[in-house]
Image: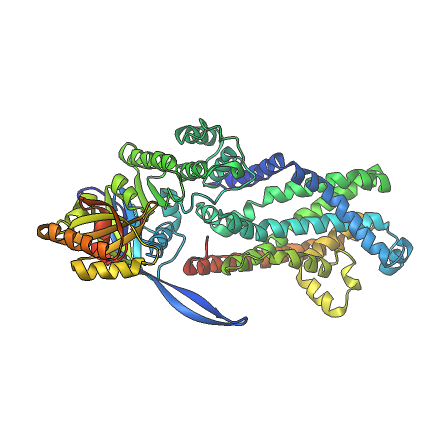
Length: 341
Length: 271
């Protein structure tokens, strides 16, 4: 991997925002919010790289700096060797950016008209523009959906997401920077978009940087993943590499129905005390999923302790499984936090 | 990267809007006459057409006088909204980052891309009033006045763009999404003498009107095209003032727009 050319590089990026807390009608108190605390990572040409972290971790801030839309307080960032601050115009020609899949187009223009407008804004013209726009509408399946001549305001979220990706590809840039590209999409649309991104990287040689808080997504499409939390990169590796970091634990998953009077916090405390292992509880559609990270030689002991505790708490146990480590387990181990899905 | 595609982008966008939103097209065509009706109606509340002539001290047809006012007022509003208001509009729809990502300076994108829109609106509105002017003034004088009015609008556009870009730089540098322009525009037009000649305003208001480029555009349009045949020196003076203001306002706007953009980039308010 390291022999490949670097497409994106960040070096010790630091960014602090000024925010205000309103007190009454006139008064407000200034506060400094640290968004990035020395973020460094490298993305190689032709790979899908995921920046994985919860809301407020610093993903969007990093993406905005790389897109030349935000200046860092300190540190450097490069796109194909060009500095994002000092060579912003050059960088803008090398990147396709999508910051939101549900906004960013003119509502009263059709998808095709929107793409033509942005194409012209980015320097395309005449036959070349017409051809490129048609090609992208075809490629992203918008033509097939009959969406190219529909007003943007009539688009479904899935169509909007496709159009957003189409815009990033207008000038055929080598680097794509996408902030939460599948956020809010229904599973088929999300899957379709993910396949498209992998295709763009692996077949067309594009470098794709995506941010996501969806571990499943990161696991299935990213060649490498950086885990970011509280403005810091906690780990950068391939998905398998990251999973190896939790080879010393076995994830035990128990699905339960919690009695109405039992809170997640209370049950977490009890299970932690009784099993002496990291415990996280995730509310799910049907019941609650309890994840306990046990050491491999104590799985049986941990399971019986956990089940006894759950019985004492009058929880209705539906399923007990011993799982393979996932990115979620990596995240729990690295941050000690509840994972995010 | 040529300006040609930038200008074409703006032109295409305007045409697409008018094509897709029929109500907007109808309003766009009716607006000049509605504005003329409003100005005339407001004027008649304060006195007859004879008292208007007496007030301004010239023997002019008030309808023709207000046609010039309406055209200039509408186009000034449109220009202010087109350049400065587009920052708000782009922010509202979330397209601002993608326009900023165009490989031009944002101020250039914003100002240059508005030129075709301005020319289109100016041409259409003058054409709409052409039959009325010709009906009142006769074919020969009517056509001459229409031509001079158009010229005044072209020259007047230059400082107005810089002026509008100043507001744009202000709007981009603050995380403000209220439509400040909606109440600012009528005040600017009032000080510029769009409703009543600037020299009829109080002295303090006249001072403000001297600083506004729209004042000279309005005066030039009226003097040259509609109030008879002013001396060549007067027209030259007005054009000189407008060109001078164009230089001043555009230079200041260019510098401030860059500063506004940098502040927005620093504070992360481009969304």
